Image (cartoon, rainbow, N blue to C red; front, side, top):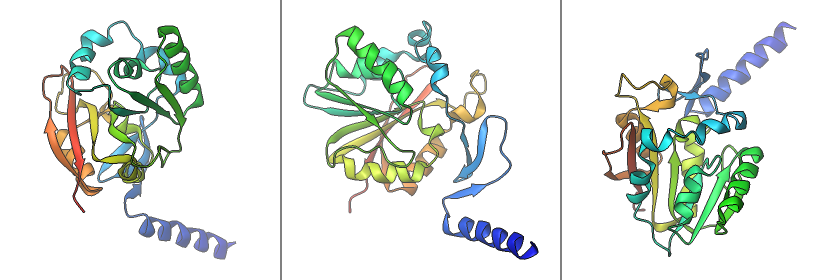
Length: 230
């Protein structure tokens, strides 16, 4: 029995060494106890919270129109809406682009998203059930991949962003939109907010460089990243 316990402990510690990107500690109330570059990863908001994504106050709170406008989309572009949820931004981006991949780890969210697109008469959306490590998109196909209040919930941020490299076109970009950690008066759970410094730190770690920022959203950071040249 003692030998089994010692062996289990060794295997656990060995996994810690092999998985250098992640450290495991006692979880906080809203976290999973898994830390990436000193940041605890948040619990995922399940499909039962879908109504919050479609709340009537969202446009006023986030200025969604301004966010989408500054993506500078056009009808030649292919967009990946990672963690697309109910399709709040999927629909807005589909109207301005050639194709949107609605990417989700929850089939329930994809079902809601598809119903919402059908209701709005939007047909240029493809629905992708991904894994926690891989968005599972066509190679070299995406002009812009966007995470709106999603990145902080990724169980495997290193793997997801690393995999995205092969799905982006040579000049493709990743856009991260996250509630501002720097805003102490923002009534959002701590683990659902990120600082600009932390976002840049994590993206640079995987081989992306900050290309530009848009600082006029009311409560969110909006950062654009490009792949580092090989």
